[in-house]
Image (cartoon, rainbow, N blue to C red; front, side):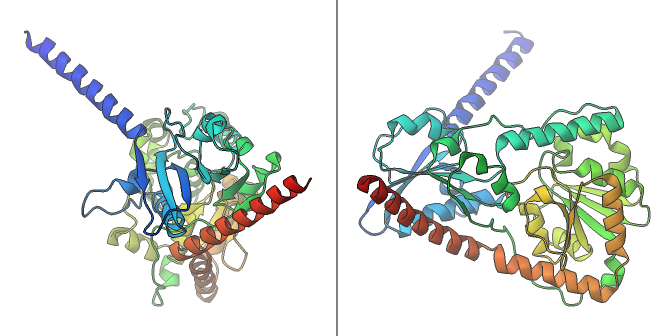
Length: 402
């Protein structure tokens, strides 16, 4: 067989093998048993990864959903339920048993609803704003960028909208009033469970705020236009006296890099780091050398990257849509996230007395510690499930009485 044909055949086999592997991962189900006698079954359609770790592996800390899904399952196990976990994009699962709870994050609930027992409590776990809002917000940002810079970039965060909320009895929400506002249309009970944080950092008493007052951070995941990096880059390119450090998966969005290459790599006051481990000393050093995080996202389900930086005492300068509770004592909510407004607020923070900067940073750190930890998530989620059980029981009693 000619070498070129051999190479092509091997390539085809490898692609098929990878597709099969991905398909198997998509359709994986994990079943967990409580230590005591089971009182029922729970299905969680979210993330399987935390439950299939090899010996010595830790739960991924690249996103809060991995630990949170693991902890949600653990809470139900502690309550005495058997727990089945599937990937939210599993496309073949159908219920084969009665479930006391069905926890959904995307598409499986609407597909499985006809096969569920009537007394199953169906909960939509909203880890984003409603996807219609989410998609429209990114499209508007991309359109604004096109009109401003004459470049068309492709959407990175678009997701197929679902009807999970319509099929659910209620919803749990990781974000704040912004995220909740995008879900109110369904007129379903909504319970807030504030997002956790992957890492908490100690308060750095010796931080030199005079030395770092002009240093700011943009830290986020994929969807760079969605997360407002284009606006932040253009703002800092016009502020040579202020420094911006960028941490995120920049290299994964080639069209963005091409459009903003000058700002990313040829502007003296802007340093592009790329993706970084939040547990690394390198990231801690960056946090300790910055005074604030600038994050004008157009739609979030809880603003995890902002919360992460607030745990390090960074002052948040964020959009309302970042879905983080911010008070003027320790941060700034941007009114329109315009380039001019970003410049104005960054410069205002950079000129504050060091005592005021330290006070705001301490307030940011204390807020994160008081509201967004793994312990707080566990406490709030357990109480929320208990409240849902009571409310659902009372609702059924009323229906029976009627």
